Image: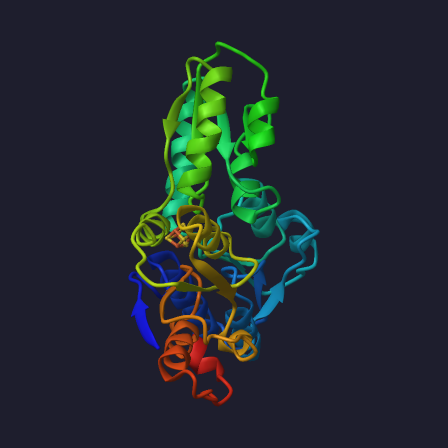
Length: 302
Ligand code: SF4
Protein backbone atom coordinates (compact mmCIF):
# COMPACT_ATOMS: atom_id res chain seq x y z
CA UNK A 1 0.00 0.00 0.00
CA UNK A 2 1.16 3.54 -0.65
CA UNK A 3 1.67 5.24 2.72
CA UNK A 4 2.06 8.93 3.60
CA UNK A 5 3.82 9.67 6.85
CA UNK A 6 2.19 12.83 8.18
CA UNK A 7 4.66 15.15 9.93
CA UNK A 8 5.33 16.06 12.67
CA UNK A 9 5.40 12.68 14.41
CA UNK A 10 7.12 11.26 17.47
CA UNK A 11 7.55 12.79 20.89
CA UNK A 12 7.01 16.52 21.35
CA UNK A 13 9.53 18.71 23.15
CA UNK A 14 7.67 18.30 26.49
CA UNK A 15 7.75 14.50 26.34
CA UNK A 16 11.42 14.35 25.28
CA UNK A 17 12.29 16.64 28.18
CA UNK A 18 10.20 14.66 30.71
CA UNK A 19 11.80 11.37 29.67
CA UNK A 20 15.28 12.86 29.87
CA UNK A 21 14.49 14.04 33.41
CA UNK A 22 13.28 10.54 34.43
CA UNK A 23 16.40 8.89 33.00
CA UNK A 24 18.70 11.40 34.72
CA UNK A 25 16.85 10.86 38.00
CA UNK A 26 17.30 7.08 37.70
CA UNK A 27 21.02 7.53 37.25
CA UNK A 28 21.35 10.26 39.93
CA UNK A 29 19.55 8.21 42.64
CA UNK A 30 20.49 4.57 41.97
CA UNK A 31 19.69 3.34 45.50
CA UNK A 32 16.55 5.37 46.20
CA UNK A 33 12.93 4.53 45.33
CA UNK A 34 11.88 6.70 42.36
CA UNK A 35 8.13 7.39 42.31
CA UNK A 36 6.17 8.90 39.46
CA UNK A 37 3.04 10.82 40.43
CA UNK A 38 0.71 9.68 37.63
CA UNK A 39 1.84 8.50 34.18
CA UNK A 40 4.79 10.58 32.92
CA UNK A 41 2.72 11.18 29.75
CA UNK A 42 -0.38 9.31 28.60
CA UNK A 43 1.11 6.29 26.89
CA UNK A 44 0.69 2.89 28.55
CA UNK A 45 3.55 1.13 26.75
CA UNK A 46 5.99 3.91 27.56
CA UNK A 47 4.99 3.79 31.23
CA UNK A 48 5.38 0.00 31.30
CA UNK A 49 8.90 0.48 29.95
CA UNK A 50 9.61 2.92 32.79
CA UNK A 51 8.37 0.37 35.35
CA UNK A 52 10.82 -2.16 33.86
CA UNK A 53 13.56 0.44 34.35
CA UNK A 54 12.76 0.59 38.06
CA UNK A 55 10.30 3.51 38.36
CA UNK A 56 7.30 3.07 40.69
CA UNK A 57 4.24 4.62 39.03
CA UNK A 58 1.30 5.79 41.13
CA UNK A 59 -1.64 5.94 38.79
CA UNK A 60 -5.36 5.59 39.35
CA UNK A 61 -7.85 7.44 37.17
CA UNK A 62 -10.21 7.70 40.16
CA UNK A 63 -7.63 9.32 42.45
CA UNK A 64 -6.48 12.95 42.59
CA UNK A 65 -2.79 13.86 42.64
CA UNK A 66 -3.18 14.51 46.35
CA UNK A 67 -4.50 10.99 47.01
CA UNK A 68 -1.69 9.50 44.90
CA UNK A 69 0.87 11.48 46.88
CA UNK A 70 -0.52 9.91 50.09
CA UNK A 71 0.77 6.54 48.79
CA UNK A 72 4.40 7.77 48.73
CA UNK A 73 6.34 7.68 52.00
CA UNK A 74 9.99 8.17 51.01
CA UNK A 75 12.46 8.64 48.17
CA UNK A 76 12.18 10.75 45.05
CA UNK A 77 8.88 11.87 43.53
CA UNK A 78 8.73 12.98 39.89
CA UNK A 79 5.85 15.19 38.78
CA UNK A 80 4.58 14.32 35.30
CA UNK A 81 4.63 16.53 32.19
CA UNK A 82 1.00 17.55 32.90
CA UNK A 83 2.02 19.89 35.72
CA UNK A 84 1.10 19.89 39.38
CA UNK A 85 -0.44 22.30 41.86
CA UNK A 86 1.64 24.33 44.31
CA UNK A 87 -0.16 22.53 47.13
CA UNK A 88 1.08 19.13 45.92
CA UNK A 89 4.57 20.53 45.46
CA UNK A 90 4.62 21.91 49.01
CA UNK A 91 3.15 18.72 50.52
CA UNK A 92 5.80 16.58 48.81
CA UNK A 93 8.55 18.78 50.27
CA UNK A 94 6.89 18.71 53.70
CA UNK A 95 6.85 14.88 53.55
CA UNK A 96 10.63 14.93 53.12
CA UNK A 97 10.53 13.68 49.53
CA UNK A 98 13.09 14.75 46.95
CA UNK A 99 11.06 16.56 44.32
CA UNK A 100 11.83 16.39 40.59
CA UNK A 101 9.51 18.41 38.36
CA UNK A 102 9.07 17.15 34.78
CA UNK A 103 6.19 19.56 34.02
CA UNK A 104 6.22 20.68 30.40
CA UNK A 105 7.35 24.34 30.04
CA UNK A 106 4.22 24.99 27.94
CA UNK A 107 2.02 23.83 30.81
CA UNK A 108 3.90 26.07 33.24
CA UNK A 109 3.49 28.97 30.81
CA UNK A 110 -0.27 28.42 30.85
CA UNK A 111 -0.24 28.49 34.67
CA UNK A 112 1.61 31.82 34.51
CA UNK A 113 -0.94 33.23 32.07
CA UNK A 114 -3.82 32.15 34.33
CA UNK A 115 -2.13 33.68 37.38
CA UNK A 116 -1.62 36.94 35.50
CA UNK A 117 -5.33 37.23 34.63
CA UNK A 118 -6.35 36.28 38.17
CA UNK A 119 -4.21 39.21 39.41
CA UNK A 120 -6.22 41.46 37.08
CA UNK A 121 -9.36 40.21 38.84
CA UNK A 122 -10.65 38.36 35.79
CA UNK A 123 -12.99 35.41 35.88
CA UNK A 124 -11.16 32.54 34.14
CA UNK A 125 -12.94 29.93 32.04
CA UNK A 126 -10.55 27.00 31.60
CA UNK A 127 -11.43 25.07 28.45
CA UNK A 128 -10.13 21.59 29.16
CA UNK A 129 -10.81 18.00 29.99
CA UNK A 130 -12.56 16.89 33.19
CA UNK A 131 -10.44 14.77 35.57
CA UNK A 132 -7.29 15.38 33.51
CA UNK A 133 -4.15 16.04 35.60
CA UNK A 134 -3.31 19.16 33.57
CA UNK A 135 -6.77 20.58 34.24
CA UNK A 136 -6.55 19.59 37.93
CA UNK A 137 -3.30 21.55 38.31
CA UNK A 138 -4.61 24.59 36.41
CA UNK A 139 -7.87 24.76 38.39
CA UNK A 140 -5.97 24.54 41.67
CA UNK A 141 -4.52 28.01 41.01
CA UNK A 142 -7.82 29.46 42.29
CA UNK A 143 -10.74 27.02 42.43
CA UNK A 144 -13.17 29.85 43.25
CA UNK A 145 -12.30 32.08 40.26
CA UNK A 146 -11.52 29.42 37.62
CA UNK A 147 -14.41 27.53 36.08
CA UNK A 148 -13.85 24.38 34.02
CA UNK A 149 -15.63 24.24 30.67
CA UNK A 150 -15.25 20.65 29.51
CA UNK A 151 -18.09 20.34 27.00
CA UNK A 152 -20.56 22.23 24.87
CA UNK A 153 -23.14 21.55 27.60
CA UNK A 154 -20.92 23.25 30.19
CA UNK A 155 -20.72 26.29 27.90
CA UNK A 156 -24.51 26.34 27.49
CA UNK A 157 -25.01 26.04 31.26
CA UNK A 158 -22.83 29.09 32.03
CA UNK A 159 -24.81 31.98 33.54
CA UNK A 160 -24.91 35.32 31.69
CA UNK A 161 -22.60 37.92 33.19
CA UNK A 162 -20.87 41.11 32.11
CA UNK A 163 -17.87 40.54 34.36
CA UNK A 164 -14.41 40.65 32.79
CA UNK A 165 -13.77 37.06 31.64
CA UNK A 166 -10.92 35.30 29.88
CA UNK A 167 -11.15 31.86 28.25
CA UNK A 168 -7.86 29.94 28.54
CA UNK A 169 -7.40 26.56 26.86
CA UNK A 170 -5.69 23.37 27.98
CA UNK A 171 -2.56 22.78 25.88
CA UNK A 172 -3.92 19.68 24.10
CA UNK A 173 -7.40 20.93 23.20
CA UNK A 174 -9.01 20.38 19.83
CA UNK A 175 -9.06 23.66 17.88
CA UNK A 176 -12.52 22.74 16.58
CA UNK A 177 -13.96 22.24 20.09
CA UNK A 178 -12.55 25.57 21.19
CA UNK A 179 -14.18 27.32 18.22
CA UNK A 180 -17.58 25.67 18.88
CA UNK A 181 -17.58 26.35 22.59
CA UNK A 182 -16.49 29.97 22.11
CA UNK A 183 -19.47 30.71 19.89
CA UNK A 184 -21.68 29.83 22.86
CA UNK A 185 -19.47 31.48 25.46
CA UNK A 186 -19.40 34.83 23.63
CA UNK A 187 -23.21 34.96 24.03
CA UNK A 188 -22.88 34.36 27.76
CA UNK A 189 -19.99 36.74 28.39
CA UNK A 190 -20.00 39.85 26.17
CA UNK A 191 -16.66 40.91 27.69
CA UNK A 192 -14.99 37.57 26.95
CA UNK A 193 -11.59 37.41 25.36
CA UNK A 194 -9.64 34.33 24.34
CA UNK A 195 -6.18 33.27 25.37
CA UNK A 196 -5.36 30.27 23.22
CA UNK A 197 -2.82 28.13 25.03
CA UNK A 198 -2.94 25.10 22.71
CA UNK A 199 0.75 24.19 22.41
CA UNK A 200 2.64 24.24 19.10
CA UNK A 201 3.06 20.44 19.08
CA UNK A 202 -0.70 19.91 19.35
CA UNK A 203 -1.54 22.64 16.85
CA UNK A 204 0.92 21.39 14.22
CA UNK A 205 -0.39 17.81 14.46
CA UNK A 206 -3.97 19.03 14.10
CA UNK A 207 -3.16 21.41 11.22
CA UNK A 208 -1.38 18.57 9.38
CA UNK A 209 -4.77 16.83 9.04
CA UNK A 210 -6.26 19.56 6.86
CA UNK A 211 -5.28 18.00 3.55
CA UNK A 212 -5.54 14.21 3.33
CA UNK A 213 -5.69 12.65 -0.13
CA UNK A 214 -5.83 8.97 0.95
CA UNK A 215 -8.86 6.83 1.74
CA UNK A 216 -7.51 5.59 5.08
CA UNK A 217 -6.00 7.46 8.04
CA UNK A 218 -4.36 5.56 10.89
CA UNK A 219 -3.89 7.51 14.12
CA UNK A 220 -1.40 5.84 16.45
CA UNK A 221 -1.91 6.77 20.08
CA UNK A 222 -2.97 5.62 23.50
CA UNK A 223 -6.71 5.75 24.32
CA UNK A 224 -5.73 7.77 27.43
CA UNK A 225 -3.98 10.44 25.36
CA UNK A 226 -6.09 13.56 24.91
CA UNK A 227 -4.04 14.88 21.97
CA UNK A 228 -4.09 11.49 20.17
CA UNK A 229 -7.85 11.00 20.57
CA UNK A 230 -8.44 14.54 19.38
CA UNK A 231 -6.49 13.82 16.16
CA UNK A 232 -8.91 11.01 15.31
CA UNK A 233 -11.98 13.11 16.20
CA UNK A 234 -10.74 16.08 14.17
CA UNK A 235 -9.96 13.93 11.12
CA UNK A 236 -13.42 12.31 11.23
CA UNK A 237 -15.04 15.72 11.43
CA UNK A 238 -12.97 17.32 8.67
CA UNK A 239 -13.12 14.36 6.29
CA UNK A 240 -16.46 12.52 6.70
CA UNK A 241 -15.69 10.09 3.86
CA UNK A 242 -12.28 9.09 5.19
CA UNK A 243 -11.90 5.87 7.19
CA UNK A 244 -10.10 6.68 10.42
CA UNK A 245 -8.57 3.89 12.51
CA UNK A 246 -7.33 4.72 16.00
CA UNK A 247 -4.81 2.12 17.18
CA UNK A 248 -2.39 1.98 20.11
CA UNK A 249 0.04 -0.26 18.19
CA UNK A 250 0.44 -2.33 15.04
CA UNK A 251 -1.10 -5.34 16.84
CA UNK A 252 -4.54 -3.77 16.45
CA UNK A 253 -4.17 -3.73 12.67
CA UNK A 254 -3.57 -7.47 12.43
CA UNK A 255 -7.26 -8.39 12.25
CA UNK A 256 -8.25 -5.48 10.01
CA UNK A 257 -9.18 -6.16 6.41
CA UNK A 258 -7.31 -3.38 4.64
CA UNK A 259 -8.11 -4.55 1.13
CA UNK A 260 -10.74 -1.81 0.47
CA UNK A 261 -8.06 0.89 0.82
CA UNK A 262 -5.66 2.06 -1.87
CA UNK A 263 -3.46 4.37 0.16
CA UNK A 264 -3.08 5.44 3.78
CA UNK A 265 -1.84 8.35 5.83
CA UNK A 266 -0.37 7.76 9.27
CA UNK A 267 -0.18 10.23 12.14
CA UNK A 268 0.48 9.90 15.85
CA UNK A 269 -0.02 11.80 19.09
CA UNK A 270 2.73 13.79 20.79
CA UNK A 271 3.11 11.09 23.46
CA UNK A 272 3.30 8.12 21.06
CA UNK A 273 6.73 6.44 20.90
CA UNK A 274 8.14 6.79 17.36
CA UNK A 275 8.73 3.04 17.05
CA UNK A 276 4.97 2.37 17.32
CA UNK A 277 4.07 4.54 14.32
CA UNK A 278 7.12 3.31 12.36
CA UNK A 279 5.88 -0.27 12.76
CA UNK A 280 2.39 0.74 11.60
CA UNK A 281 3.89 2.38 8.50
CA UNK A 282 6.05 -0.66 7.76
CA UNK A 283 3.07 -2.99 8.18
CA UNK A 284 0.86 -0.94 5.83
CA UNK A 285 3.61 -0.62 3.21
CA UNK A 286 4.06 -4.40 3.15
CA UNK A 287 0.30 -5.14 3.08
CA UNK A 288 -1.17 -7.63 2.04
CA UNK A 289 1.85 -9.39 3.48
CA UNK A 290 1.35 -9.46 7.26
CA UNK A 291 4.64 -8.36 8.82
CA UNK A 292 5.41 -9.79 12.26
CA UNK A 293 7.57 -7.68 14.58
CA UNK A 294 9.70 -8.91 17.51
CA UNK A 295 8.54 -7.83 20.99
CA UNK A 296 9.62 -4.30 21.89
CA UNK A 297 12.21 -3.75 24.60
CA UNK A 298 12.21 -0.90 27.11
CA UNK A 299 15.10 0.67 25.13
CA UNK A 300 12.94 0.75 21.97
CA UNK A 301 10.36 2.88 23.77
CA UNK A 302 12.45 5.20 25.95
S1 SF4 B 1 1.73 18.06 24.03
FE1 SF4 B 1 2.35 20.19 24.30
S2 SF4 B 1 1.94 20.64 26.46
FE2 SF4 B 1 1.91 18.40 26.25
S3 SF4 B 1 3.99 17.79 26.74
FE3 SF4 B 1 3.91 18.07 24.51
S4 SF4 B 1 4.60 20.22 24.16
FE4 SF4 B 1 4.05 19.98 26.34
